Structure formats: C-alpha cells, structure tokens
Length: 218
Image (cartoon, rainbow, N blue to C red; front, side, top):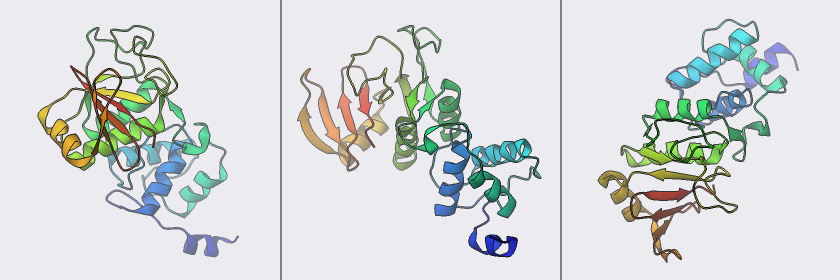
C-alpha cells in the first residue's frame, strides 16, 4: 500500500478528539503496555501514551496519531500481550494510571499495594475488563469512586475472584450506591445475604455490609 492510499484510509486523532478512531488508537497503544481506558476520548493520558510511543519509534513526539504513527502502531508486534483484549492482565502501575486519570481514588488499611498482604489494596494482575469497567462506571455515574479492595489476597476464592482479577470493592458512598440501585436490575440475594444487582452487560454488584463487591464479566 502506497503512502497516498494509506493517508486516505486512516483518521488522524489528537487531544480533544472523540469516537471510534480514538478507541482504535487506544487499543493499539495498549498493545505496547500503556494501560489506557478504551473510552474513545483523547485526553491527557492518551496524548502522553502517544508521545511515549512516538519517541520509542523515533517519530516526532507531538502526540498526534497521524499516518506515520498509525503505521508504526499497526505494524509492530506490541509488548502488552493479548492484543489489548479484556482478559489481558495489567500491572498495578497500569491500573493506578487508569484510575488516577479517571479521578478514581483508592485506600488500604495497610497503606500498601502488595497483593500478597491482605491489608493492602493491589491492582496487580487485574483484568483489563475490570479496570476499564471501573472507569466506565465512574464516567457513567458521575460519582466519586473509592476503591477499597483489588487483587490482594484475603478475599474469597473461585474463578471469578479478586485474586483472578475479576473483582473490585468500592466504598458504599451515597452517590454511587444510588446510581447502582436505580440503574441496574435487582436479581435477588447472594448466598451470604448480599443484595445483588446486574448490569445489562452482565456485571454483578453485590452490596456487602461495608462495601460494594463488583464482578466485571464484560
């Protein structure tokens, strides 16, 4: 494919752009380990990732994803694994960056992030679907989200567990609690008595005594 044809096929995106072309750029950047939320909004995090990628490829680091940057993105093999798919496991740093960029906060009783210590709050090995679902919930609800549990040890086991990267615990603040109970479908109680709500995408929100226990399937 010649340069003239290539330039007509691609859509140049930059800070302030929105839509499917931005999502495609975010997916490609995530192949290189940038850990962006694939939300179609070209914000400061996407611009920073684009600049870092451009620098790594010897391109002009202007943060504009144009013909040359697109070509480099789609022709490389990437390093993030999984092609940016939802089952990709992220590092604590990647998830922290995604959450910080979205205005999501987190806390732990031990003030630490070691997933092998139960008093820490860790995002290590969190599934991309879980991280992106948390960001999407924050943006859809407009509520503050305070994460109190991630992938650290000490939670119940099972396939769809915290340790396997499917679950996040949120503080039951009034705004997010009202959003969940008014937006999602009540499906009855869990075996331990926790009231459950289900989103259209299949995610489960269980109201435990001190927090929301959320399982992100999609």
